Length: 132
Image (cartoon, rainbow, N blue to C red):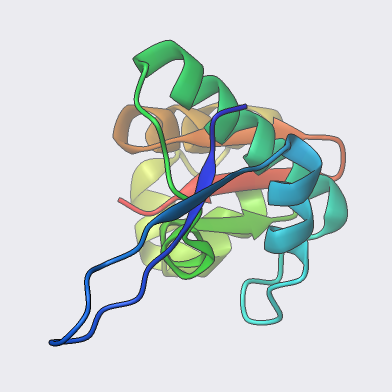
C-alpha cells in the first residue's frame, strides 16, 4: 500500500523537510478505529481502509492519511435504515417510499439513493457512507 503519512516542519528561517511513511491496511484501520471522535468500529475501520486502498490502486493517486478529513467524509451506520433515519424526517421518508413498502423494498430504495450520490461500503456489522 502506498498510503503515506507526511510529516512537515515549516519555519520562516528553515527549509521544509518531508518524510513519508508507508502504511499498511492494518496501520490505517488502527488509526481510524483509534480516532475517538469518528466512532468507527474495528470492522468498519478495516472496511474503510480497504476501500481507500482499492481507490488508491484504481486511480493511481497516492493518498495521504488525514484521519480528521476521513472522519468528516465518512460515517458508520448499523444499516441503510439507520442512515435514512439519521438523514430524513418521517415526512421525507414517506416521500421516498410508498406507504405499503416493505422493509426490503425500503432497503433497496435507500441503497440506490446513497449509491447514486456517494459511496456506500458494506461490511459485516454495518455500512460506511460518504458525505454528499
